[in-house]
Structures are given as C-alpha cells and as structure tokens.
Image (tube, rainbow, N blue to C red; front, side, top):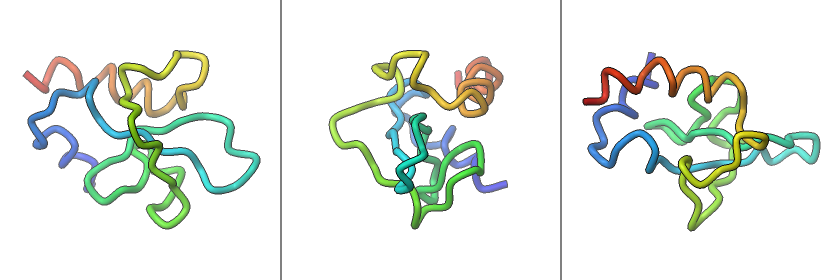
Amino acid sequence: MSDVRVLDQGAGLSALSVGRPASPSGDHLHVMDGDDASLCGRVDAEDLIQVHDLQWRDVPISLRCRVCRAIMQVAAPFAG
C-alpha cells in the first residue's frame, strides 16, 4: 500500500496536503498521500486537486473525508 509513504515525509501527520475531488459531487476534503491520490484510496491522483495553503489540521471535521480521518487517527500513534 503506497499510503505508508505519508508517514515518511517528516512534516507531521497534521501538516499533510489536502485535496478535493475534481467531480462536483465531491464535497469532502481528503489527505493527499505520497502519490498525490487520496489516502483513503477513493480518489485517484488525476482526479484529486490540491487545495494550496490548506493543511489537514486546518480542515474542519465536518469537511473531512470520514475514511481519511479514520486512517489518520489510526496512524497517529505510529508517526512518532
């Protein structure tokens, strides 16, 4: 799973880049993993648009992808 690379970037989990789906129906923001796809695997890199000047820690919980949020909660203790 390429998503493990997100833990190796050294910037801290909450400082990760955020992307929004290119489709108009995509109303949640996602964590961008090492290959610029969504961490949850729901949005491919070519369909995920980076939201510049926004980091995961700044995204309101109501706008976060629930699967990305759950992965981040599980990964936090290992980011260490």
